[in-house]
Length: 97
Image 1 (cartoon, rainbow, N blue to C red):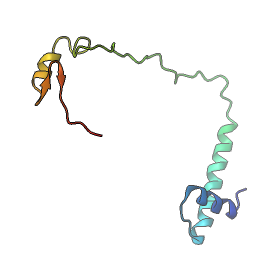
Image 2 (image 1 turned 90 degrees about the vertical axis):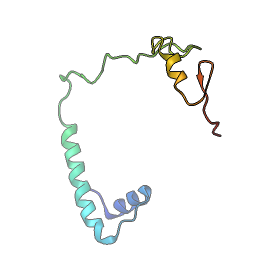
Image 3 (image 1 turned 45 degrees about the vertical axis):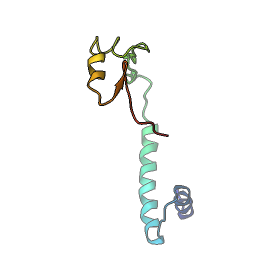
Image 4 (image 1 turned 180 degrees about the horizontal axis):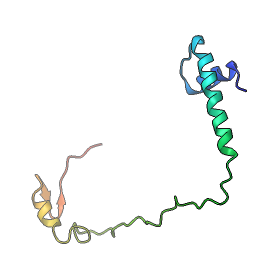
């Protein structure tokens, strides 16, 4: 099913070193994995309802100029005042480039 040359090709694609002594073991392991996948492909899933779809939506607040007007309920100014350095309603941070 899978040849030793296939193992070496996969190792090269994955950029891993596979010693010759490990090729036989990897071949056996990969063949077992492929057999299991083949068994899974035979399973009839037409009557299975897909419950993985979630109805939860990503909720985002509006982008505003004022700190705390949406998510902090007026506590934004108090939080900014606690910052080590602040200017108006903004926290001053070190410029990183």
